Amino acid sequence: MVTRLADGMPMSSSSSPSLMAEMLELLLIKPGSNILEIGTATGFNAALIAGIAGPAGRVVSVEIDPPTAEQARMALTAYSNVSVLTGDGGERERLPKGEAFDKVIVTVGAADLSPAWVACLAPGGTILVPLERGGSHALVTVGEESGQIRGKIVGWTGFVSGAGTLSTGHPLRGLAMVPPSEMHEKSLRAGLGQGAWMRTMGVHADEVDFYCYLSLIDERALWTPFGSGLVEGRAWAAAGQGMLRWTGGKHLAKDLERAFGDWERLGRPSTADWLLEFHPTSTLPRKETRWWVRRRFYDWVFRLAADCT
Image (cartoon, rainbow, N blue to C red; front, side, top):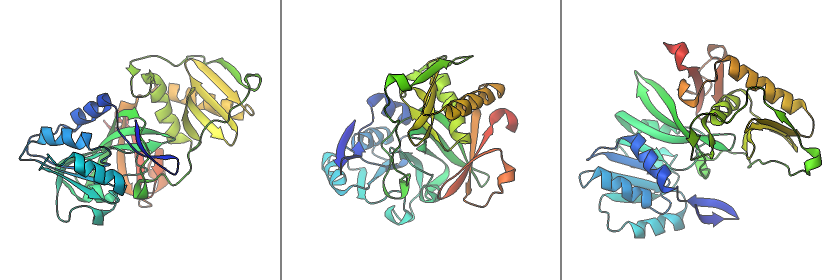
């Protein structure tokens, strides 16, 4: 739910209670934990975290929007173990100096993992962050293992995109509206729309599984009301609910159908089948991996778990 607009765009929002609960369960917060939250919004999530961490724990929440930060600060006055800071939570200088956190929870869509979060993570700690892929977000747990930053996709959802360091740096894309006479469709040979129902996306799990793969191999990928899509200007194609739909030329539909076939030949890997590594940008030769994404701070390397055993 959007709680504040700036220049007509969402600046702050409050996640649904079910999503908040899911994220807090994934973090495995223990009493006495030191927690960093990026994106305070109303302060409700920080209050929940403070209750779990208990009086021996500490919660530092960072909010980039000054009016939102002040409102949250006032709402949290009864919580002595919660501090609300104003600033860009992706920048190291905006975080408490020299303080290590057992858990970092990011409650806005992030274009990349911030080196600041990795630097302030205590040994054995975990970062939970929604990483943006084509307008939706892979919910990823991140930690350090033997000096390597590794992650695993634990869910898929949609957040308000972060501002500042966390910004995607590109305008929001959407589908061009066309009359029904200009839209074409046909059945997908193996279909989509199977598996568990994902409340956060309002679709079946296999539709998100395919989109995860599509977003790895094609920068034109976009999550659409019709499912996994490819967009070029006003032309688009989308696969979902057992159908392939397109407008503005069939080339995108052919590309999407080809990607669907490749995903099937891989055995229809689910989001949970992917393991991630984060390497500082430009430090890993491309030939080292088949699937990768370059962002501002890190190259994200994706590997299938079955290939790593």
